[in-house]
Length: 588
Image 1: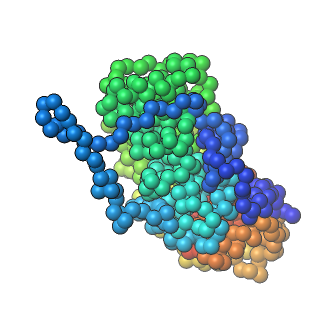
Image 2: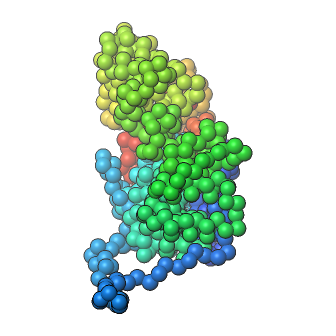
């Protein structure tokens, strides 16, 4: 069957197994996945009752850390005797009204309307868990990644047959693999510590590290170390003691945590440096001989201002660059290229990039290459039109990689939108339209409808972006197909068909012409179509990501785009569906 010619074959196999509960292994294990340390291997997400069987960044030791002294208040009766008054701990517990339920977990972000609480409908929790765990993130589409982030972070009902804390862990772990470290933190923090499971403890550590925030482990370090006797938690307790102003306790816990390992290893030294940042003296970190970046190394280095060598970023997946872009402790200049990469994936916004380069222009040496970019960006916003166009062309054409060139389209979207449509600019119209639509500025882009040439990429993008839903004549599409590359023509057809912009009577003939199988089906197509009929927006977003899970648009099947766009439109996300279809034209 033709639909299975790309990643849809994998999707069908995945879904065939996804319907079955996974019952092997009843004990969570350590959580640094092969996919994090070895980018060539897909990174499995943690399971609901266990995590991938790979060692943690800091290996467990035998003995556990010393237990804390009993809680109590000491009051002096006189100079020679002290009495201990018992503490009624119930007075310090949260009232029932303040406790958060595991039945609904997530948060709403400003300017990002939440998904419906029943976004996953009646989907079985084990089925969703399997989809999340096997999803090889990041996915091809910037706009689909934004949709999936919204679905995963929103306050949604916990599905049947999975613990709410474990489902939160699954969501957070997928968000981390997408590069969405801040959204992942919001999800795990919406669970009360007393409800954490072993899986959520492990993901909680990864979330803190991805945010470069070892202090984020402090609220869970003690209970986690009782559940999971890994040395990583012993070291976390030491760091938290140091951050809490208890240097003696921190020193004892460091010695305990280092037991059985090389005290001079970089993992131990980074933990000691976190303690030292709280006033315990300087620790020097040397990267010589280190051939692999891990979450532990990246998170603690970032927290303490230790620069990670660029070469080590090549040993991990692209999501770590996105964590770097979001890390508030890093200087603007150190985040710039990472932020552009993150913008191409939807992790960083167009407005955020403009603001970042504004900071660079103010802070950096006038002769630096980053300041030159910032000045071109300012020119693109403020100069006379000929100079603005020249600056935009410089920004768009400067990067060598396709991903960074797309990021520049995102960065300049509002500058492009500020240029009044003019037939004299027809040679630049396609790129101006692409830039505006990369940030969803469809109203401004549609003003160029009379400027773009019939059959051009600009025409195709505007035909896909038009929210009015006007039909596209077969002759107009044929004009485009005659000048476009075969794969691009397939994707434009798939987008138009999925958006309902083609006459039904024309679809089959046009499909045969461009060689897109619109009638075939497999497990994935049946699943996403059924989820759309039920109105399960969250399930549709997740399944769309399953169908488009590749690092670029090249391997994405037109059939995957067609079904994804049609399903998103059916569940009320037509705006996102249109932008995903446009993105396919822009990035192929």
